[in-house]
Length: 401
Ligand SMILES: *Cc1c(COP(=O)(O)O)cnc(C)c1O
Image 1 (cartoon, rainbow, N blue to C red):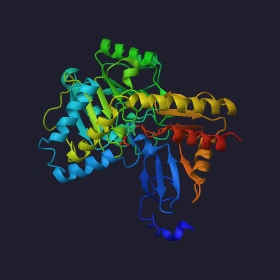
Image 2 (image 1 turned 180 degrees about the vertical axis):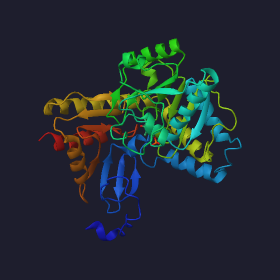
Image 3 (image 1 turned 90 degrees about the vertical axis):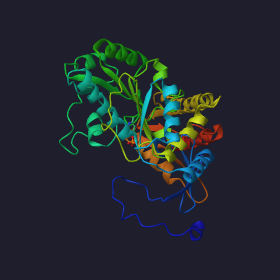
Image 4 (image 1 turned 45 degrees about the horizontal axis):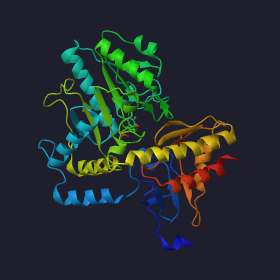
């Protein structure tokens, strides 16, 4: 078959085994399609875990990378560069927060948010340093962000944890109030808990948290690493609740597939002094040029309307499927949707079957079993209507039996 026309892929034994991965070796992607070394193809509704805002290898990113790589790769974080300055100005205007610091990942942006809140506590709140976070939360894999996370299974890992992250329950204001004390400086959460399985903080809860933080002099930190940059149908998820955070973190979709994150803050909160925060790759113009190209597309007239149209299509298809198999309606917003399945490991089984379906002659479907019973859908924001129809048809054959 086609195997002979593809060179043997390299061995994987030299890689640290940090995840269970399927045997395929991916070599190429185009839009909503991913291809492996044997020429098999998958329709991709995972997109690098919600990072490829514009799908695989979009020409605007190729062009931005090529152009910027000929101009300036990295002058160093001790010097200004025009791409980082332009990106900061752009994001500040979009988010309504005056200041930005760039990182290479979401975890690093959250680590910076934690540091900024602790500094704020030192400067303005008599040394208060505790940040109330939430059960089920995911903020990253550095030691402090793992400590801030409420992901089941994280408790036992890499002890001792970084102290100072008491856990409240999402959408339960009393559980937050009960944790507030003299050492509290901030409340930190995801507007939609992505890794927990697409669990939404309700607009009413976010509004109540904003009011509570204002009344108590606490900072509201929103982790929009997964929900930001158009993912939920608005530029930021906080727009659905009409609340503005004091500190905002971005990652994933901001780079459209390249590693960049951002820590943003209101001017009045931004108490970092020279020497407090940094990073060798902070604001490197190559990644900033890509983020600017992504923002050009996402802010273009009609783009978010397209995201909302595809969201309505995917949700309607998932809801119809849910009715047929006796599952609850789809949850989430925009193109961050999830479906709960009736069987215990139904999502794991379905994702695996849809993956293994791929052969030289027929495509597979990449979907994420974010929990054993829950499928998460995070297609490219520019996914085509017929691609979603194909995905729904493939899902239907895998689930409705
Ligand atoms: C993915 C994610 C992170 C971590 O981002 P990395 O780039 O993997 O470090 C943090 N918070 C949320 C909400 C995420 O989804």
